[in-house]
Every structure is written in C-alpha cells, then in structure tokens.
Image 1 (cartoon, helix red, strand yellow):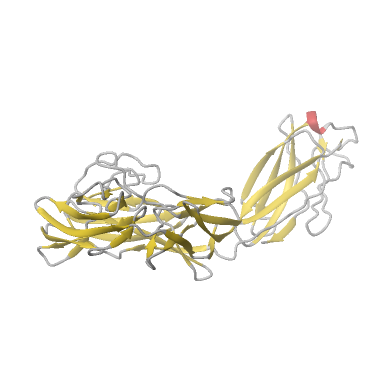
Image 2 (cartoon, helix red, strand yellow; image 1 turned 180 degrees about the horizontal axis):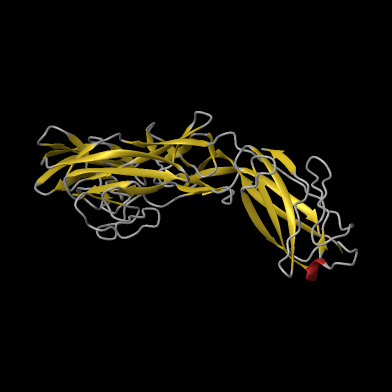
Length: 417
C-alpha cells in the first residue's frame, strides 16, 4: 500500500494522509504554480449581416464577431464552427461535403461547387435558414431569407481605379434585383480582364475579383452573371514603393481569437495603395500567433498561445512591423515529490510501485468537477500544467499504485487566476 504526503508550495505546505491501508509515514511532495491570466473572456458572438435577404442561387459572406468581457470585439469568422438549420448534419468546421438540399449550403469547403471561406453561405432554394456560429459554449446566429427576385444590373466598385505595377486591386460586384434590393455578388459573378498582359483577375474562391497587375497600361474589368454584366477600367502605373504601414500597429486579442492586419504602401508619385494581399506576412513567434498569406486570408493572424509576437509585412526591400499580444488562458503548473514509503513504513520505489497520479480540481472547496490523469514518469518530482480560464480553483492530488488502488486526497490548495 502506498502512503503519500503531498504539499503544494502554492499557499502553504499540505499533506496527504491515509493513502492505502493503515499506518503512518510517507514521502513529502511540493506543488508549485505559475499563472498567466487573460483580462478578456468571450461573452457573446454577433453574426452579421443581421437577418439578410438574398436572391436564390446567390452567395453571401457572413461574419462572426466575438464580444469580450473588456468590451473589445474580434473577428472570429475563421475560428467558430458554422452550421445551417437547412442542411442535415452539416459540420462546417471540418469541411464536410455539403448536401445540395432546398435551402442552403454553408461550409468551409463546399466540395460540390468550389472551396468557400468560413461563413460563406450559398442559397440553393427559396425560404429561410438559421445560420449559427459557435465557439465553445458561446453561439450567435442570423436568419437568411431567400427570395425568387431576378438580377437586373451589376455595378463594379471601385470605379476606374489606378494602381501601381506590382500591386493588386480588389473589386466588388453589386447586383440590383427586380425587387429593388441590392446584393454583393463578388463571389457569384464571373470576372474577366480585356488585357491580361496588363492585369489578370481571379475567379478562385477566396480571391474572387482580385486583380493582379502585370504591366503598366489599362484594361477593362468585367463582372458577368448570366446575361447581365458590369464593367470598369483599371489603370496600372509604374510608380515605385517608398514605405509600408501596418494597422493596427499594436493589437491585443484573447487566446482563440484572430486579428486582421492591413498593409498600406506609399509610392513615389504620392499615392497610397492597400497592399494587404500583395505583401508577404510573417510572425516572429509562430507559436504565439501565426499569420496567413493564403488567398482570402492575407494578413489574418491566428492566436496559438499567450505572449507577444512581431508581425512583419514585406514587399521587395521594403518592410514594416506591428506588435500582436495574445492574452492567454490562465496556466497553473502543479509539481510534487513522489512518495517514498508505504503506510506500513516499507520502502516504495516510485518508478515501479506507482502507476499514475490524479489531479482533482473544481471551483468550490472539496467540490471537484474535473480529474486529470498524470502518468508516473518514474522521477522524484512530477509536474503538470493546466490551462484554465480566470477564476478561483481548488486542487488536490491522489496516487494510484500498480494494482489500481488509489490513495485518499491530499490536503486542498487554492489558487485564483
């Protein structure tokens, strides 16, 4: 039988008694904690646009915004799990193939048509569907109404823009329908360029309507849906890049959230250009936050762990930096010494006599709602880190021998994150 005395160097020395069988004695152990806490916790999710109306066979991009306890908001579109009430057993987060049912198909990956971005929803029939975004136990939703209205015209914005060679221009196609409603059709139309030697334009999911300059000159950009089309002129100049700026310059997000960065270039002719999709993005510490260079997600930083990282945007020999801070969940590290004697006073070899330890904890004294098994590493000191949200926690540890017998609880320790 194992007898373990465990103390947690957290607040005071604690002892575990009466582990197995009878008797007294046993090894002592220490429990240490280190904490980092988050000032902001996710409280709700807002899905926008709110209760939109769209035409059948058109698409809409939904956005999930997290609202935190410190009143900050973050874009969680690519982080949440999306679902639609009009699609059977749809798992958006894993990119499940979408069943083409009357109503909606909404997924990260719609294999039946094209690869869509998170929150991208396609109307496949008239009616209504509730679209929900969920992260953990927090969720938000919006209801989409699909009408049978027909497309009358298409307008492209910006109208007649001018960009610098080596940069890109994002175009937006807006459709006007027979019921006088308007809708963003950027992902639904077919894009074309009259002079691809000047600029090419994308029809790929995630970068629809993105024109890439090839050489100085002018080209006509056209958006077409069925027999309806709209056009504008794109001019490419030969000015050179002088400097970059990144916004926000200093950002702070909660662990699990994302941050969209924007890169703006200043040119020799005095013009400025949004270069978010043209620069190369990097993070100095990808284990804290990674940043995307993928089409449709350029400049989107995804938090990984608590800490700070430097975000850099580079174009040729020009670069600029920003700081991103991720406020992590509370981390408590527990460490204790292995017991060395049994309750009868006989010698216990922790490497062969113990199978594992169990950490019990909860948010009220002696009310343990969670158990974490820690495999005995066969050393004299055992430690385990726990990721916890802010709050007050109560901990105790037990030992389990190779016969499956478990000791009684250690004395309880408390820690507030």
